[in-house]
Image 1 (cartoon, rainbow, N blue to C red):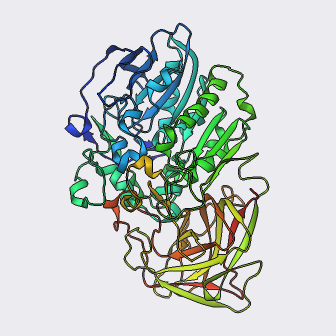
Image 2 (image 1 turned 180 degrees about the vertical axis):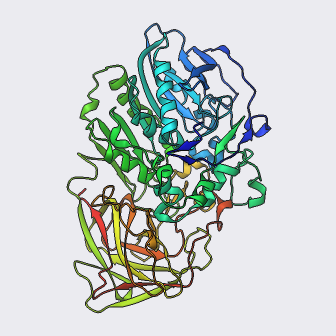
Image 3 (image 1 turned 135 degrees about the vertical axis):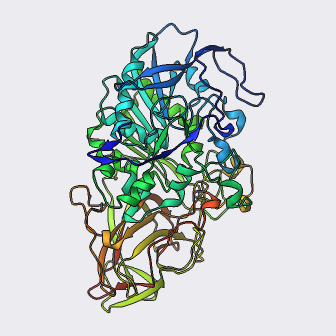
Length: 627
């Protein structure tokens, strides 16, 4: 890999050997296998739908001489040329690697028999898409498994690798010359970077939830390093064990790099953050240039992730043309990927842009948003799975994102922990919390301020909120500030949402793990106060983007004004229900996995004071729409 970015040396570390049993790697095996219709990979797998040609470990040459390895799945008895669904993965292309749906309790609601077993983690099932006359090609990213080179963690270099791959595959004799990118998470993030390089044979992209700016959106969101999950990715793996609440940290996390496997080195983004904690050319290289994307885009987002919401909505907004569609799904990205309704929708988009089928896709509304009611624990989430009280409104159509008729309503912090609409209290006050209290990333960790407003008429929040707060700390020269919006029922109880229908998970409500993949508490915001300076070029009226290049020191006791963006969400409030703004010194979203609880460390010391009223017009702007 390129070992420098703009003269900045890239720190690397060892990557797990492909020879470890946990890698589930059976070596380099180039060749062709026929998978016959009705055959099964295992006795529990979904049968193959059509006779399928499986080409293993084909060589994909790159401009610098590196060779990647790819697998091709294509229907055997189709004489027409086929469009390609290209899946770019670091996790293993065809049943290799440790990651699978078994990563999550109840397989995230996707039973074994729903998939063929030939899918890769976070990617489409070839047994499904071959039956619709698409070729599915999966590529091991540079440095992963049997692809040469060193593993790189997002950025333009990966985009250039993707460019070369698209152009090489488009020349295949069975291809119609049109390539679409598709996949969740990392498999989505890579699409922003590849599409920004503008490969000529890229027909469209389907980033089904992916971050777009490593520093600003997750690794160092708001200037606060978030290391537990990223260390887990860099250093640890699962050995195929489900991360249930009953397992201890020592039982699950192993002291070696196991998430990725390869034969050389991998980029070490955590060491890079330790060496370069401020925005520089290295980190800017890891911000996708969505404004350069020219191809049609089907963009997925959701509320049920702490990683991808900001990037998905940001890139959708920044893509500079009208051939783009956004869908905020009502569950979770892995669960959504394999639903029949999703397959039908994705197929309509792909048929239109890769096969020229006139199916009226262009009449699809630009944004389709599923609005949650945030249900009391135990209620199922989507109406076509189970009809329940307060089921979400699915795929509400809008002509744009953010919706054109959005009204940003201010609610001012005031006495008695209330949010006041319309105007700030006259008298100034302050309230405090202990910023360095221990926290586990579970519900109600303690030392969390709550300001609330009870609605007297129905209200629907759709979009990103923004808080403007005046804060101080007499005990330290900086403040790590964490925000969360919550919904309260008419009795004042904080509501949660189980993201996957219980009948799909196969467990009771009380048995669902308290992790953010399976439960949503509310959208969040984060800022280290010394990083409060805004990037005026990247900021938008509804979303502040911080500069992160020149921290502003804070004198202990100094009151500072901060603007903090809160992730996009879509939540309905009935009369008598309430919205709450929580303010604390620790993360309030649930941890990604139970063993990661309590591992996050902030930079706080002492008490934080929130000032409001008088000259301190601390408030939050809530985006509301008519539904």
